[in-house]
Length: 117
Image (cartoon, rainbow, N blue to C red; front, side):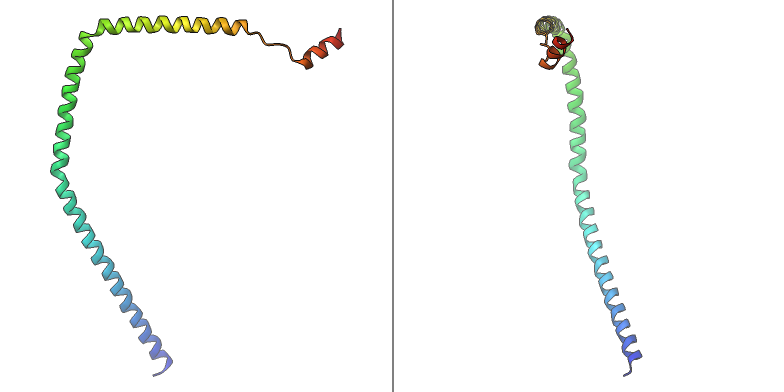
């Protein structure tokens, strides 16, 4: 057997091995795709039930939320007024404190001012 025949035989073996690897990869991918499709099919019904329950929950929450707001609007208005008053007094007291705390002149500036005089 000469070198050329060995080379051709080795190339044929490598092609066969590559074909086998590719076929094994395709078979594995098909199996995994089948499993994923089965899982997706099993999840369709529970997801549909969850979607329907979510829509019903939104409907109930809107209805009762609107009732709650109508019944408690005067309370909410009073709370808003109280919070506004508290915020205004807090802001005013913070402004007074900031005005009272004037910064001292730095030592460098005092020294420069005394030299200039």
